[in-house]
Amino acid sequence: MVIGSLIQRAFHQPDTRVYRTVQWIIWVLISVSVLLFAIDFLLSPNYPGEKLVDKLDSIILWIFVVEITLRIVSYHPPKLDLFEENRLSRLLHQITGRLVFCLRPMNLIDIITVSALIPALRGLRAVRLLRLLYTRRVFRYSNPYQGLTRSFRDNALLYSFAFTALGTATLLGGFSIYLIEVGKNPDIKTLGDGIWWAIVTLTTVGFGDITPVSPLGRVVGAFLMVTGLFMLALFAGIVSQTILTAVLTIREEQFRMSTTLKHIVICGYDSGARMLLDTIVQEVNPEETAILIFSDGNRPADLPPDFTWVSGDPAKESELDKIRLTHALAVIVVGSRAVPPQQADAQTILTVFTIRSFMRKKPLSRKRKRPLYVVAEILDAENVEHARSAGADEVIETTRLGFSLLAHAITMPGASAIMSRVVTVGELGMYVGEIPGEMPTPASVSELTNHLKTE
Image (cartoon, rainbow, N blue to C red; front, side, top):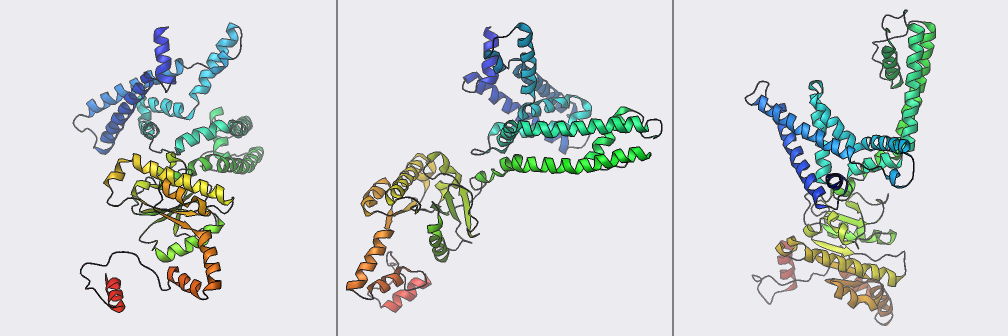
């Protein structure tokens, strides 16, 4: 019982130390086996040490055989804990439960991998690369292999229906062509020949190695051809709704795994922020500085191609690594126009606080020459100090500034137009910074302007 409990923990309880140890050993063995596979593949036949490499590879494969066998044998079907049944029913559940367990995608990969022990199937050793990627957890936020597994599991009924329909059509066509043309067609001698012809016809491959010779056989062939078109449409529809969606989620990892540096991150996006994006393009050259929008949902159809979209919640610290925040130049947190100002400001303050908390925990933050600059938009003036306390370097009160300009225009006509020209891109412009030391002072405005433009 002690050994059985240990094996159960080692292969089916991820929160135990023995499980993590076993997984680490498996990861090392897979890495070594991939290295041996590469050596065997790249070097010419009969190279020195070929027998040693083959022997080591076989030993590792046998270890994998033991591992997958123990994993299957120690699997405990959940149905046994739910129902009280007789011995025969429990035995049946033991068998069917383990068969279903073997059909899980990652277990199938392991079973296919160990099939490489058969000399004719040595090429299957390459399949272990999938297991290596899965084990290393290269994809932190949306692993496509886990997505595929989930798609198969959540849509098992759809796939069962599709494969059942394909199997039924194959058997029906194979039996029919065999009974019709056996003894008449020299290419159809066994039932296996008929099944092979049916599969080739249904998949519209059409090798031409077997061709019906009788009129009735051709009728069966025409029926299978039309059925094959429906089968292709059926599988295309299922894949487009399940597997394709799972694989496309890899885009969440694309930016994190890139080498982008000194980019600008805009947290939050709605229709009211579109003018901000247009203005940023005028201030910052997208070809030199990447501009990324980090917000919930899918990329809007009207978003200009200059911007990179990453889906996620900027108020969750666990997702900020998606946007390579430690390598970013600045962050702009935009307030939402779809909710009341107080709620929008609360979300902005939480996002700023989360960003600062994330950066404090990252060792790379201490190596930066200049800290991450955070600009926050606040809609209600009462929340300005809260945003600064949360860590915003600069707080822009967009609503108050707009209303102030409107009110100031009554008492000082033309003043708002001047201020608008100062902050508007392409107009007068206002620049804040130190005067260069080599610039003689006092200096005329034209001299200072020419010098700054040159520098």
